[in-house]
Length: 387
Image (cartoon, rainbow, N blue to C red; front, side, top):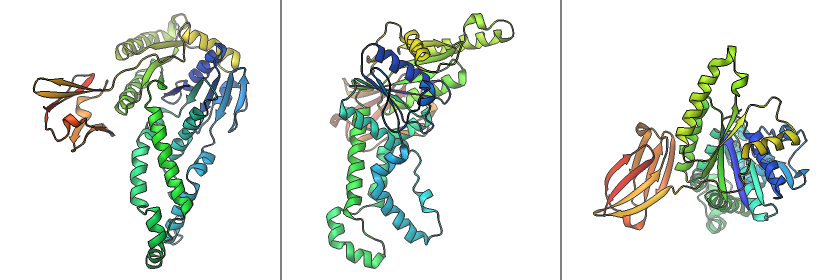
């Protein structure tokens, strides 16, 4: 099964690109499911059809689904949430709105992403197209497995067995109720699913991400930053979709200056993503809505290319032995040298780019070895260790 995730800055047309891709694939005979994880669902608007939390048939070989985040939320951690609510109510003496405290930013999106894993494990479709939230929200979920693991360990340090043995005494002294078995079930369920989801998202032979952009400078800059962050976290971007290109024939007279700006933007995209397959879509003369228009867009966008193929795959973390040293190269395009920060612990490298941090487990040969040098050459971050 193939999984393709579409994301981009809000308003660039990622839903349209995702829907057009799904229709193009279904036309080729592949069985496709298109799913929206964005809380502001617009798949139904794109297909001009009511779509909800149940799988809806769009046409032959194509189904659609808009994730109900509240339902997935309760399904994933309902018992744990109730336990935390009980603890916060005791500690807050009823003075704080507890429900609001239990709304963790990005958590609903993470649980919606669990649905990707469920669908993948069902194996009922050939391709899953995911219309994801705007890039900022999409990136936030990449950090959640590590963050939530730490939260679980600090807030709920009890083991199931010890809670049963010492629980009554602790409860009597602290006045805090001990978690029941179903709370531990939720913790194990969430942790196991996060690990499986993370493994799936990192599987470059199954899943890839496609960035949708427009030729405007501000959008290109966000696309470049997103590309860097995705590679920092080990995710594969295999294509860039450039949407809303103004045809020259439509930009005469009053709008002529826009053509110059657009050409600058398109040149920057070519230079920035020279290795990545790029697909271009002109601004349409009518709203891209409903199956016929979206199918025409899909044909125009991909032409003879198979949209389900892995269109690009780059090795992110590379170790090579050299005389007197070991070198690690990390693929990190578009990063600003001044934004890079590197730390070394015994068994891992901690690399930060602005406010994004990734931990790279060190190969055995590099552990406990001092760093000789660290240089960024606009594409790779090269770290040399003493051999």
